[in-house]
Length: 171
Length: 281
Image 1 (tube, chains in turn red, brown):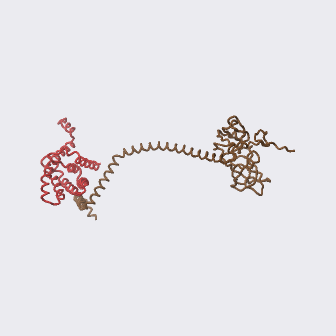
Image 2 (cartoon, chains in turn red, cyan):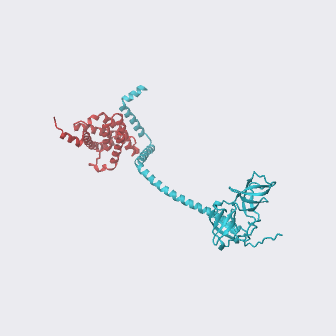
Image 3 (cartoon, chains in turn blue, cyan):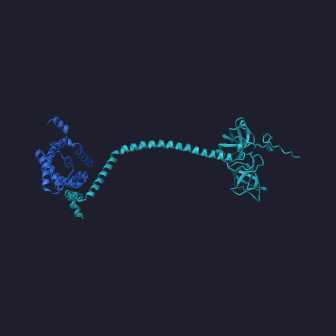
């Protein structure tokens, strides 16, 4: 069941990324929904499964650009490994810690992708990294922190949890 | 091998990363043409699977509707085929009748009639036809179809007549087969019996049987086909079974031949054929 949920989530993320997320552009920057989706999935799974999910998301992105087949798959697989290793850091109370860890994951993904995309052309690589990757990573990380926090809050009970806490009387 | 498996299981994360990296690099190293083909085959497969998975309900509903429509159509077509087959059979029957009428030497004197009913419950096995005295029908006229001899007119009414068929206990037909003459009558069952045949020479199986012209019926009308010798003969004469040429349960049209109503020696001489009784001294 979890597998089906995760696959549907990935499909939804790619669908929204390709259609609606142009509306959420900020100064020409768009967040990476596929990476956000991977972040959420890896929180629930772990180990080898997380890396396989990363490979699947990357492969699904590559299928729509056959000439870049394998690029996103590599980047997402390694990023999934990194996220799995640093999983606990995403949910710490300190927002800065979770923000830094998230932005590191985004930068790692973009670094790997750009290395293959630019075919090791350093000037192009640096230009794209500074103009597109870094700002995009910041934007994506900001959203990721919010998403993770909301998710944690919902898991803790959400509004009902808050009501429960309010109504609980100490003995 | 076991150690390797244990190592992989113990370091599953690293193993998964290694495998995914190998796959990704393999895809990167593919030729451009192969990449396109591979990507297209994956997307097509996924889309087709997804389309079937999410549309099977609609597909089944469409199938149900199509099935219902085809069932009605099948019923309509079956009915049409049945009517057409009936029309074809009737057409063939009428063609044969027309052919018979044209080929009959007395075709100008043949009266066509439709069979209105059958009467097999009374003493005489009869057909009722829709031609009567007003149409020129007279008692004892011969009645034929394209398949052969039916019988003779038994009773005449103003607009209809009853025909005694040859498969009647009281009917007699003077017949010949392969030049051998005999008398035919019906004794029950599906066949007529032709008796009075010489023991030394009898018609063979499959030989056609025709009227001789002696008696009520004119000569040369097909009656039936010889179907075997009657085996329990202990008489001085032999007999054979004759299968009639006509299926009396499916006779729909007949021809009544004018001028064949010869009075016979058993009748009261009421015929109008103009034959006088011989004055035998």
